[in-house]
Image 1 (tube, helix red, strand yellow):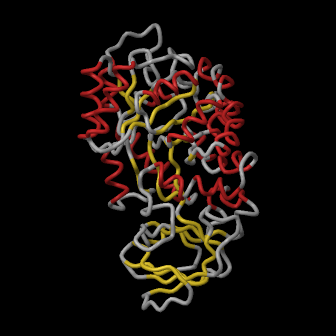
Image 2: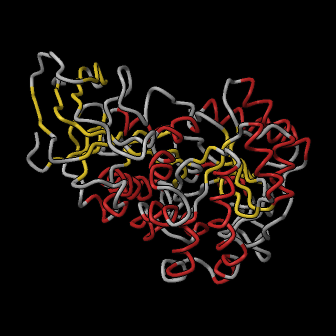
Image 3: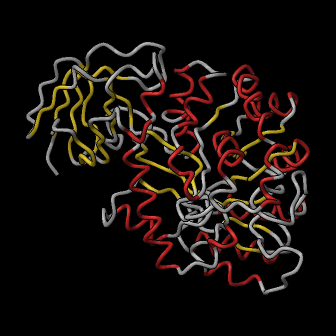
Length: 411
């Protein structure tokens, strides 16, 4: 891997509401080696980015790279090999939008992670939970009321985002198996959801004992639990049991938001998925009973953003899109910017996202020692956040681990 000196970079990482002064960035062995003015660095290649603005590689904290269709029940029935190949295409498109790290919240396995890590495929760095843990009749149980098929097959289907486990011994075993299989954190379904047929929003799924048992397993392995949650009571219950990261959180009360701000858990809102599920979900295979649930959570999520900022809640960027809607991944920037300062929106996909993933200092920043992930943008996204959209059309250069994965003649 060649060493590289990036000159005259005006860095935007969410720490300030203006870009930095022109700065040099030295890259060696896939890491940022030095950052400063007028660096003396004997690089094999030099690129001048005076005409661009530079961001750390973007981070999406909530994706489903195996979701080839919005009908996740059907997705679970597709051949594993076909899902894997389609997932590679989905991840390459994410990378070309400037997302150099994504956290998968159910479905991606160690094989996909290794393929990304070893550059067998063009893909973002993949942080995985393996299969999300759910329960009979809960979110990711797609059988519906007329189907009693044994649920054990979900654990073996790459296209299934989750697996079913009931009772304390089962949830302990499932959590341990996912960690043994390469999971870097545990994901649980602690509320009902939109995409599955039998679980209304506000459905208290796992028991308190089951929740505590899962959190204990994760903690014993030195990691954390992220939970799919909408309803305020379900959220408070999960927090009481030790859950660290709230996924979605659309129906949180002001009291709960204040509690999270004080206690320091994380929230990953995913507003763009509801926007496009409402517009396009049925076209891309979302069942009618799921479409009917969308309005239960759609508008409230956006309204909570400003409240979370005021109360000091750390929010990660999340998209949570399915099937043909993956192309809208970057539109979450636009939705959030209607309610939050642009610098905060960018920070949610850089520095704050790194905190959510427990990878501070490694990703989401341009600093010595961090992975050399970098996105050059033709224009200032602090003034026009839509420059981060349009499938990376305004990004002439994208580096992952110091390697140019997209270039328009800059290297």
